[in-house]
Amino acid sequence: MVLILPAAPWRERDGLDALTKVLGAAEGESRFVGGAVRDTLLGIDVADVDIATRLPPQEVIERLQDARIKAVPTGLAHGTITAVTPAGP
Image (cartoon, rainbow, N blue to C red; front, side, top):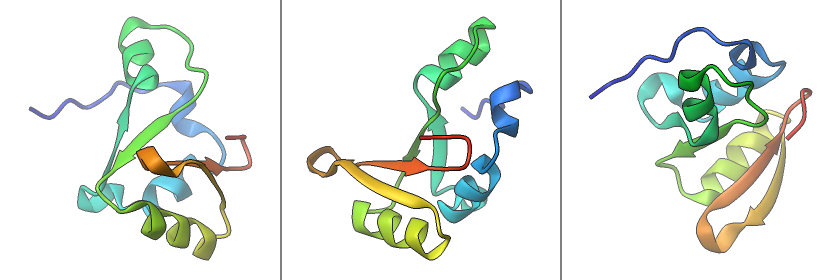
């Protein structure tokens, strides 16, 4: 099942397009998940955006650093990396 999210203001956040390209969204390597998806479908403002990826954490960090996006290893044991874009984490 593929669900295309409706247009939403958070999808225009500064740096989000670059971030999804770095994480390989076009190739199916990453997806929007969590509260951003839920809140968009419910029509609620989105506070932060979570992206799940099939990439190993170290590769995510390397890709982010290569793209000059700050990578913060907030939960490596769980595979969690925080990417800090111009719009914030």
